[in-house]
Length: 115
Ligand code: 5GP
Image 1 (spheres, rainbow, N blue to C red):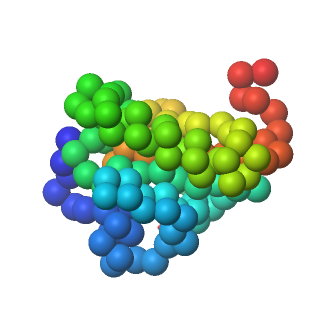
Image 2 (cartoon, protein in one colour):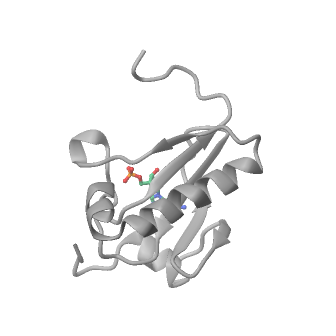
């Protein structure tokens, strides 16, 4: 779903605002979260603004979702290979940017929220 205003992530992709970029491919970009919630907290973002959340991405472009997960693993491999991958989906789940993105959390993560 497109938004009339470019998302903050589109502005990062377009280099309108700075970010600490980890890696970029033709269809994905990964950069450090501005407010890290773990020792390593990286966002992986499809460049297209067409999908607001992971369910829309899965339905609309499953190959891109698979590529996103593979890129997350590649990034995590530089930090020991183990990671938590989170897609907040919906405001009540904590989603604030409606341009699909995955949080890669690595390191001492503390309590699993399911515990
Ligand atoms: P959400 O809450 O939608 O799941 O995640 C959005 C994430 O984007 C948050 O963790 C927030 O800290 C991060 N974020 C928001 N604005 C910026 C920004 O301008 N730069 C970077 N690098 N991260 C941002």
